Amino acid sequence: MKIHNTTGGRIFDGANYVFLTLIGIVTLLPFVYVVAGSFATEVEITQRPFFVWPNHISFDSYAYIFSTPAFTRALITTVLVTAVGTAVQLLLTVTMAYPLSKRALPGRRLILNLVVFAMVFSGGMIPTFLLVKDLGLLNNYWALILPAAINPFSLIIIKNFFQELPQELEESAKMDGATEVGVLWRILLPLSKPVLATFALFYAVGIWNDFMSPLLYLNDNSMWTLQMYLRQVTAASDLIGSGQQVDPNFIPPTQGVKFAVIVVATLPILVFYPFLQKHFAKGMLIGSVKG
Image (cartoon, rainbow, N blue to C red):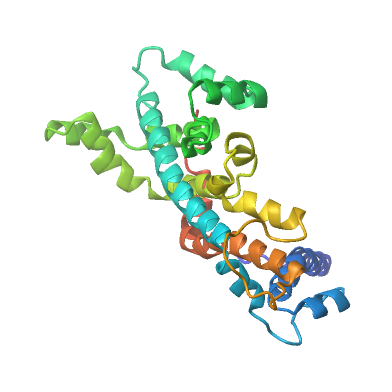
């Protein structure tokens, strides 16, 4: 049956569209300004308080940061830590969620209660730092990955998803001689792409944007990630020790460099998100109903 909207309903819908469009524009404009500023000259950035398109396009900021070994090293480090960390965290989460999805597992209820407790109460910054220190992980990239290797919320959602899959699939696979690992790898994981893609994105964004962990655990500036480098660029008037000879007549546009680093730090997430977006909404809802 077709529902005919009333005049008041159409006015309400129109007002909603206008309001949400304005909110979207207000949210998008600062990023547009940062992107435009990264391609502008220092003079234009100084003289024009706000613009969405530079009068003269300049690539000096990007040329400068990509010619700086410190930036290149931080970018490569962040990419590698994000890739390895996402794989490790997803692997550990899945391998813990699968056995917890078995109702016959001894001690399952106690473990789930501890997971929920960990989701509500965290250890805190100082105890976590002392633990990382005692494990000998200071100035080690594993300190950026292992302390948050299993997210309780992600674990519960993936566990619930495994529970909702038909038991007949596992039973038929075991009748064909498949082991528990074989059932997980060949049967369950191919059916879990939406939820795995969703939490892979969550893990990757969390590691990529992580600023506090490198600040606490990495004392060697040669090991800094992109977020630490971005902090240094935005906090200081000049870029720190690149160790490279630069033309003395070339003066880097300070504000433009800040904008360029922000764009480079944000762009990878924006690029990869559309490829996972089709799984995102479905993955967030799957497994979130049953306990």
